[in-house]
Amino acid sequence: MTEENTPRHVKILIIGSGPAGLTAALYAARANLAPVVLTGMDLGGQVSKTHAVENYPGFPDGISGEGLVKDFNDQAIRFGTEIIFDVATEVDFSARPFKVTTYGEEFTADTLIITTGAAAVTLNIPGEEEMIGRGVSYCATCDGHFFKDMEVVVVGGGDSALEEALYLTHHASKVTIIHRRDELRAGSILKQRAEENDKIHFIWDSVLTNIPEGEKVESVKVKNVKTGEESDLSTEGVFIFIGHTPNTELFEGKLTLDAQGYIVVDHLMQAQIEGVYAAGEVADPHFRQVITSAGMGAGAAIQAIRYIEEKGL
Image (cartoon, rainbow, N blue to C red; front, side, top):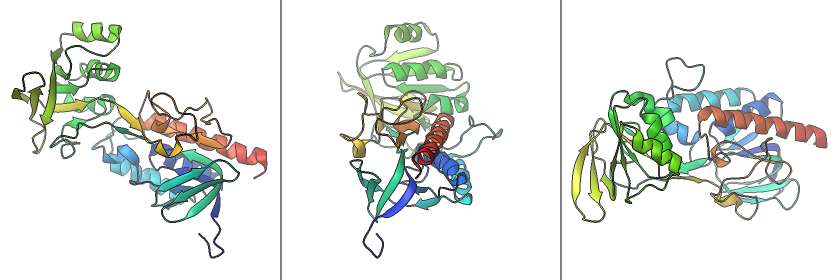
């Protein structure tokens, strides 16, 4: 709040600081619109916790997730983006300009770009968080290459788990799917493909209870939910696909969300309220890649810039 106790006004306010948000900021900044980015709890989103990114163009030797986020951030700042380490706590779309409240201050904005991302649902078991980047992953297309000719496990039984397991067969020597039920929840075509793949094996009625810590993943503890019996399973990788949760709690009842909670946008990244855009994993339940998030962020910013010009703001 200013000395006059009025909110601070910006033309483009971006909520979220992952690849989508920082790319949107870069485009908006290059248009001399002085965008403000509210980082949320972590600068960079999920990718900042990724050990290595090898599928983002321009880095033939790969780059750490943290390093990529730093480059995104530095480039956005270079052209005039203001990065604020704060969390949006309330949004008001009932009047224009839009109003956004954070822990630290209040803003009004002519346009809003939402890039709050999505979080992978975790098992919440000992060793899981500690071994991320050391064998635990939530993205086969991101990390599968690191497990060439290795044995890995996949946790889950839905479409995404089978899609990722089938992808992993292009790299791993053996993929063991661990599912808490005695049959898969995935569609029939995916089930058939998985069951017919010689590299894929199944452990039914079972859950992971522990991922022993160390330099890298070497084994997991598996518990049969019917008998209670526990056993150790040797593996070099753990891929967890039990769902993603979009970070859209702030927008419930204010924007149209799909059945899974993702913000519904049109092909121009606009939500149902004119001047409100969403990009990246908060609006993308399908691809969930750094490059697609960045592309969506660029598109959202381009549309926000055009909106400001058309409205004479």
